[in-house]
Image (cartoon, rainbow, N blue to C red):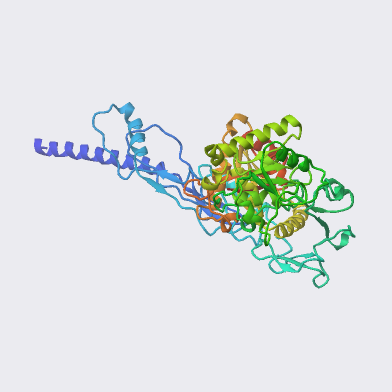
Length: 570
């Protein structure tokens, strides 16, 4: 063998060794990609790529492909983006032990790949709600298995389709179909072909004819039998009055009927306020307050029979008169929680500062802080303090205008959440309550899981709807059972799930009646309250029902299977 031939053989051997090394590296790279695992359920089947094991960087520039996203399950907000490099970076200089850190940094600097949620997910627990969505975390494939299990186990085929067979309320004083209600809703003096779901009556009747309903907007102080507790004791199933703790609150407030956001007019009258009081024997101290003002230098034009000192002249135009005064006397005939009548809301419409004798919780109804004057004490000292404040505001235009700033900037969230309730008419809300009660009976008979154990965590199936709606949407949250401190982000995550569930183009119930004043990530609305759906509005808006932190939510989930929640948007 010549020296040339020997050199050729050596070079060929080296080439073979290099090629073997190259193919071995490719083989190891392919091994890093584990096979697909198929998940099947009664609801759907799809492929999920298994998570790869974390390994130190071994010099091979191998990157995970974008994971396969199940076709019907949109990902969570904050988890709907994945990063991967547009090209394999090359490195010169950094030591080998720092190479992995450098690669990870370069990957983090690459553009984002957005994964859009699937828009056509259909409801799984209702064949009528039409737009329920499912939210889950795709970083946790075992949770997806839990979700599929719960979707199958928790499905209910409700017996009644309210589009085909609407709720029928027998009401001797009304014949009406409620347009725009989330459930078919009819009122008539007689039953419909032999059936009725509820009846409005002044005397409780036999239960086999449907739910008995008491509806009255008078003061409970003056008519004790219409109070919630006494009405229930008399046999009523559903109570509708002005109290927010009644089953269906019937308030005097409304964006549409009152035009609350009408701009104020120039005030032309020298007197502080106009009074229209003709019942001089009311249980509240309103007559005492009126007389005190007049006697102690607060000029009042009294057009009513009580302390009468002013003639209207011509045809009566109460709203036209109110608009000309800086203040308006919203003096109720009783001092009772939540008894806030048109006297107060007419003052707001007129752009006058309300001076209130009435509900002790009137500040729950104020458009913004420092926008009303509450006479909470009829003692001489209390009335002297109020009188001095009125005189100060009459002499100080800047301080007075600050009390009307909400007319320009918009009312506060608390006030919006209250008045927005009226965007769903109380007659519709009664139908929604009756339908909810009927469905609750079916749900109580159903065998649902609503909870799935996954390692040391549990996946909870939560049903959520906007206030004023009937049909629920689906949300799944994971609670770490082994580490309570690991659940500190549960409530913020639920909020993000709700935002994703409804989407930026969703129009809340109130959208047709008022303009938006809040925003969140491009939406013209934001979440104000989330609370158990069986809470009354007193508990939901001002009480302890709404979730203030993650711990409260965790405790609620631990004791309530298949929880149904409501959300208020403002």
